[in-house]
Length: 270
DNA sequence: AAGGTTACCTGCCCGC
DNA sequence: TGCGGGCAGGTAACCT
Image (cartoon, rainbow, N blue to C red; front, side, top):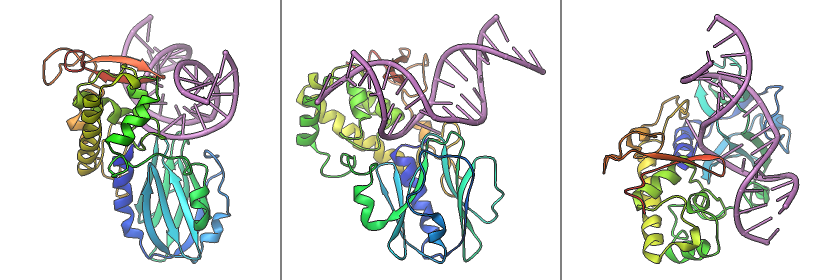
């Protein structure tokens, strides 16, 4: 499901649960990506101190030095509801002292929930080797040029490499390359400085705009309040195979790169 | 050792 | 209507 703008939107919505105290915990029988390090019943009687995002991971800090690390995978939802109805793909839930519930629902179960000591977060295998946030100052021209100059793989695959920059997934990789006017199958180390500069700017712009639109909803993405995003209305190429390019009217093309669909305009992108 | 391929899952949509 | 194939927003363990 989610790329950075979607996870950011979910996180913003979760501010509702700030300071609430956990009264009950629920875990389904089904396996997620992996099991929690600590027993989730440890959360009982502890309060939510903070909610953060790093890359596509959601971090909820609780009292007594515990943190919940959550990834939504492809199909995960993290929703606050008044009544918990144990739907088919509900795998984890917390009931708070005001009787509201925080529910993790994930049909494909590529996501996970982990509970660990906050001080161990930095060492967590999923967080330890991440590149910079796309909107941060560390993601700058010097850094980006250096990273790409080492890479022989196509530029679209590099954009989706979390060691280079986090949070840019299949949608925003295609959209950023279109915005920058760069063909997705160019080799990363073949980009000229002016192209790297353009691409850097486009990634930041697209991610920023998508956050403002509360993310993109294609099939089933919803935020913590159950609301869809609207950035799908701004797609220039993604999921527009054989539709007219909004700029030049030529037909949008689709190719497979690393097993994932890439959309682009062969006239506007060089 | 970088870079490509496969696995992990369920659901939906399309063509036959 | 049913069934098989292909596809889906992610990540990392495997191979070469």
